[in-house]
Image (tube, rainbow, N blue to C red):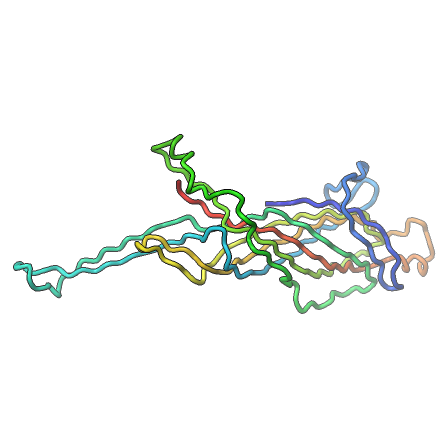
Length: 277
């Protein structure tokens, strides 16, 4: 699931070595600017940046507990011909396995907040940690009864079976990222940035189970949700070309070689499972 955000860049005052730019949402994009390919018709260029992220959250609160595969084994001894004494050399083993669809995560919403700084340094900055989990919320409140309590499918299709996706929970996650991008040929100004959040992996692993009274159903009472993905940025910028034919000393004051970013990503993850009706 992908979500697009378009941004407009506005220059701000900064120190001598760093030029700060603010990113704000906007709907009116300049129609004369085309973000296709590497360069545009007016001499501007586009830099594609991929910022990966990964995190995990512990979940112990569900709207409906996930159902997992459960195997029940039973072993019996045969009786001898008289039916009185067991035959210890012959065994009967019965194994019953119940299979269920695995829970899966879906990206329901994303919001990207980013602050970009133009820096004259030409080397990357080492980062201790690129992912910081800051906030997790409980599942949203269920406004209606479970689908299991309704007979709408059973009445309409008495002999049919359906796999219906059930929302097990919905969780808000905030991740803080840092990214430093080197610009080999230099950059003078950021003109526009568009972002796209892509979720590549969202897997739930249970850590504790509950069993039904007849031992035919095994549900997870808590577990860990692993999340992986990346932010795809398309940054249109003005390359370091001396258009105004300034002196080298004055021109180099406007040239930057690194883009430093501090990014906060808000994700809303839905945990679902296909359940048979």
